[in-house]
Length: 323
Image (cartoon, rainbow, N blue to C red):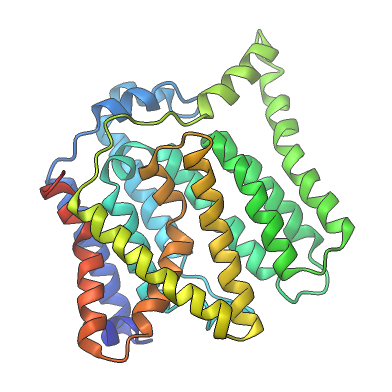
């Protein structure tokens, strides 16, 4: 019943999804998540060195970024309206995924900014699907990847995911590839225009790049909530595989783009040393779409409700029962 209400296109479903999301974040806030070791890393970041004495300010900024991302991720247009999962359910799943990584949620706005930019990039890629001319959108996709890499340097690895997505959704026009690379390079050009006015432009450029490179947080620990979340990820993959093997061409392409994005983030964790909690945040959008589709595919309402409750309670379990 709960799943049916939330996935419905009614004002009740919309309000319930927002209320549950707000309650999750509020509970974690009042439970007093500790992030001292994470905050020390944030102070070295070029965009957030001002946060030295702004603990509450960082939490508020991070909460606003999460809210903005959750609202923006509800956007549906053109061919993806019926293939990304229900808006309310997907949004609630994304908030649960991010909230389970409480240290990242409240104390790493750099990761949340990168995630917001990547969601925008993801949307632009989908927007180009079956569009005759998309040079402007693809240029901004490259620009978005470059911008995300200024906040989380390892995001540059997602160039591979974007390339795979363009192969799946576009015709392979050489102009589009050139425009994409041009957008990526323009990020460095814009940054150079800023640092050129400093006393040591080359050193400032180097420091900006180095400070954006996300260090692994050694204090990250697995919890019962993470186990629940990883089980949901594993179960959701069965729905993705079903879409690829038995779905329409349209559904297969969209599912492959989702999986390509998740695979790109996995490479960021395994090869480039991104903290696994930050990686889950950066992959929250495609993961939430797969989870929403999986829950919606349940024929029995009580199974769908149990899966949704497990997803909703995962953030609380991550705080109460660390391993």
